Length: 342
Ligand SMILES: *[C@@H]1O[C@H](CO)[C@@H](O)[C@H](O)[C@H]1NC(C)=O
Ligand SMILES: *[C@@H]1O[C@H](CO)[C@@H](O)[C@H](O)[C@H]1NC(C)=O
Ligand SMILES: *[C@@H]1O[C@H](CO)[C@@H](O)[C@H](O)[C@H]1NC(C)=O
Ligand SMILES: *[C@@H]1O[C@H](CO)[C@@H](O)[C@H](O)[C@H]1NC(C)=O
Ligand SMILES: *[C@@H]1O[C@H](CO)[C@@H](O)[C@H](O)[C@H]1NC(C)=O
Ligand SMILES: *[C@@H]1O[C@H](CO)[C@@H](O)[C@H](O)[C@H]1NC(C)=O
Ligand SMILES: *[C@@H]1O[C@H](CO)[C@@H](O)[C@H](O)[C@H]1NC(C)=O
Ligand SMILES: *[C@@H]1O[C@H](CO)[C@@H](O)[C@H](O)[C@H]1NC(C)=O
Ligand SMILES: *[C@@H]1O[C@H](CO)[C@@H](O)[C@H](O)[C@H]1NC(C)=O
Image (tube, rainbow, N blue to C red):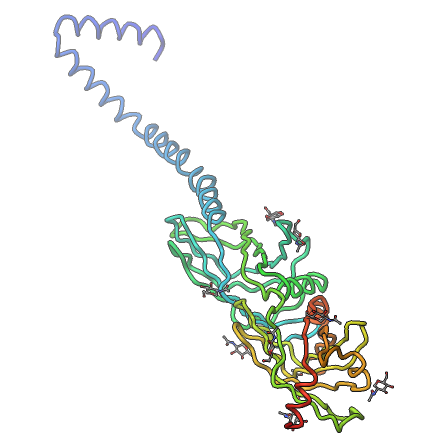
């Protein structure tokens, strides 16, 4: 159709319209109908293209953004941690997590490897402590539970696990982050990898404040120290939700001058949340204790020196224990009286 043709047609149309009034409209409709019959496939293609132009970005750009925003807004809460069977280069971890999901999207995350990073005063460590196998989780609104149960994982970095163990023992609040790229699904939409990077703050052991040793008995006849000459009950309050099996822990007992006057051992030291009462045995060198007495009392500084599990030193626990000092004021005269039953 040339321009001229269409112009002349238009002219005829107008004339018809002017003459016949509404009859012109009917003519136009028929023309439109005829045009549609001929060109329907063009309209169909344009319609499909339009739908795709609108929906593809939603699926491939908008949906990943929505999914990523949802993941960013989710808040992670660690409700329990358990550490068992430590070896110098691996540890068995249980981590219980609540995910708070403010969004109405309830995606599923495939199993993924979550790097756990220490966050010190808001700054992420550059290396992960461990990589945890996070199981497949279906996130619900407003919250859902997930757990990594007794996963034996290699230590990723010795300095980071030593830092983490030290913070767990010493600090009132500890922050770690779970970082990775899980595959996310919502319904039938294409699965996408999202950046997961959630930090969470929880209670640490706060220096195990309140540490004490009660029911101490001394055997004054045993001065050769071939066998323990002291025993008692270590009272260790743990204000966190963290369980740690430390194995056989040896402590050094020092007087105010810094002289080691004895050693103590807690066998199979398993710290659970709440108050722990663990049997303790020790060897006190009376030759050194007696001159350090002050009105029958001695102030001891106690530090964990060795942490041995299945015959192996656990360096990261030893670092944590060495960084934490306990102070204990002992009434040695009273202990002697109790021990001799006088
Ligand atoms: C321990 O976890 C529970 C939830 O399981 C929580 O309510 C409580 O505050 C936690 N306690 C500490 C000291 O973090
Ligand atoms: C965090 O910062 C405070 C104040 O600057 C400081 O006292 C504290 O030692 C820092 N904590 C750690 C774990 O470095
Ligand atoms: C994890 O393992 C420890 C020791 O191997 C065991 O005492 C504990 O019950 C286990 N925890 C779970 C949840 O199975
Ligand atoms: C996670 O977020 C923190 C703080 O926003 C940032 O420093 C860190 O580089 C992020 N890590 C990754 C792997 O995206
Ligand atoms: C430790 O225990 C003893 C004996 O039960 C008690 O007299 C003492 O006050 C306790 N010390 C602390 C610091 O709690
Ligand atoms: C603690 O020591 C006393 C005195 O040496 C001894 O009689 C007692 O049997 C010991 N108790 C334990 C549980 O070892
Ligand atoms: C106790 O300490 C004294 C003085 O340092 C030392 O001579 C003695 O050998 C020690 N006793 C034992 C059994 O270690
Ligand atoms: C021992 O500790 C008590 C109470 O903390 C303190 O008053 C005393 O001066 C200390 N004695 C020595 C010798 O450090
Ligand atoms: C602690 O020492 C005792 C006695 O030597 C031993 O039977 C036990 O297996 C040790 N515990 C660990 C966790 O290594």
